[in-house]
Image (cartoon, rainbow, N blue to C red; front, top):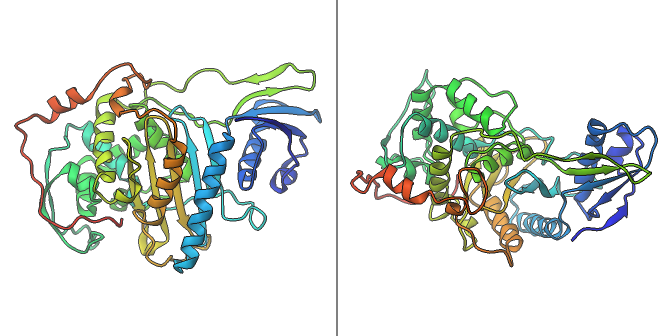
Length: 402
């Protein structure tokens, strides 16, 4: 549902410029963070020159209300449980990049800082898909055997969330259960440069460290960046440019700008992108993201930074990509909040509501061109893994925290 309304200039927008606009899709509650973001971008497309403009946006009123409801309930739950999660953000976009909902913080009236697009935070294990994609591009498969064991790099010894080592396992199991030692070993094999190149291809533009900590998400990214990277996977490797403005109309009713095109084209090869999506589905299907299950095909990844300073869940269906983050602006630790807990549950609440009435699509309904209904992949994936491939699954506890 969309509506044309005259938008009262928000505080951040007033500080930036005095453009009077009407926005198609009325802002409600925390959508004012979205409106600020749109107004900041208007001058990139047209010169206002004191004119009244109408800006048509991608915001979906129903999804925005659902996002605000999900985050509001999460904040109340966090406060009741004394999780010390002072802030949070949510962003939802289509796999093609149209931003449908945005919650930039707990209370716009108290803080206009937009944590969905402006905050740079450590993603922790939510960065691991870039590591695994780089490994898959070098020829590894979900069934590749790896060994969870102590790793020491120049005196640094990364540990697993469980504090245990499980021995032999498959690459698929390692990702589903967020085994840190395996991610570090993969980074050693493919090299930081390859991982950074892969992250760039996925749309992550911020500076990233070229050390072993890169594999565990020590580089800082925005929620929008990370959600965009996952959108590339949802599109079977096709590139994504996130956007909020579809049209800008001048006072005479003539269009000054109209969005055209469908993105930058192929970003990463389709086969490894699809393989990674299948592996990430296992994160939700019994892995660390099991609390994000919504009863339909979905894929995602949990992330928790050191000392519980950041907790993430970013995931997608063939129809929608959503990222959720919780933390504190001053970087202080939360009380054992992990990506598989509050963020995953919040993601499930929002995505469950967002998909009400939508057809259930499988990832094999998305073709190599990133569009629905243009080809099946799962048969090719079975051939890639092979029916005779060695299955090396440890008998250990199933972590659901990181």
